[in-house]
Image 1 (cartoon, one colour):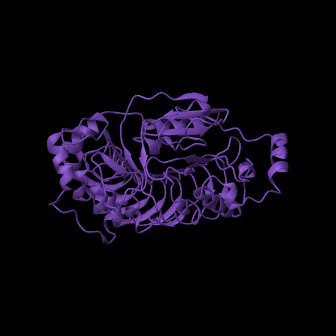
Image 2 (cartoon, one colour):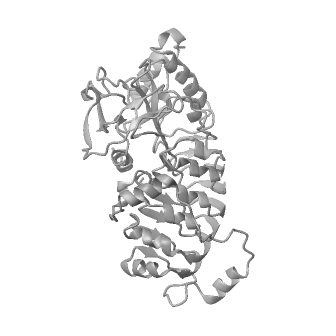
Image 3 (cartoon, one colour):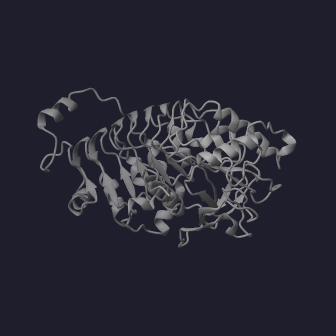
Length: 442
């Protein structure tokens, strides 16, 4: 198995998801197998009656339409996307089926994992956003172009209870998936089929589909994961990104442009990690980013963002990794932000290098000494490893259009109550323990 497949799957273990996920070993069909496979199905044109459910027939049509747009498939993966068996042993590599708990429990496509197949297609629009039951889309290390697909039109919202447990990654045949599994992102979720050797992870979480709008249960949250690092995505982030109910968003190493949309504040109750590293995002660092009070990872490093750090960032009581390096930020590093590495929060790493900050609050000095705060290559007098004075002066002479950081901030009520009830605890973790960072590994 490719090393990057192991690492990218490990990230799912370390996420807050709870499910039974089947993940195939990266073994493309051999030429002789492919030949036999083609001979049996290439002339077969499946009809609606050939599919176990209407949902699978609709998914089949969407997959075939997307297949026809693929320009390059060096691993010949799409050769398996033939026929009516979307949940089979060797057919439709990368697609996973499940029977969500609740509702009619009909089999449907719940996950797409195309990580590392080097597929080349002009866009994902009309594909991922047309699979209404999708909970996970992981397609890092491909060459998908165009804009980020609109996710707000997906018909189903998954309800899941988050329960973190000590889990073990293990290889075993898919036929060994426990029969009481609530849902799987794999072929047959109740243990009646095989996939040969595959990697599975027990996440101990359940989907409940079909719950009416506005109906919530304590401890439950909508969740989706969109993992699209290392592609060729371009254009702006969707203006309605915040209405997608994403929990994990990884868009590093693409060519995305424009501002971070203000609607991102609507992800306050769902977003745990956001990775926008190494794009071409611009505009002012938005106040709304500081409203993501459940986020453990906020990484917008290596972009073209500018402005001061908004005072709302003092509300990020759950953030552990905050990276804004390599932008065009300026002003003071807020003392309130640095205090999140103390009793007020969980901040373990604050990377602000490669900007144009001119001062730092008193609480920040201790973080610099401890290695928690990196402010190298800025314009802060008295510190080592700063920009040349002429470079700083040239930047300061440029007009500034972003609003000044406010001295007053109102944090979301939920964040304020959590902060009062349970002071944070700083814990240094390996980057691979975060879902979005682990997807960066090839």
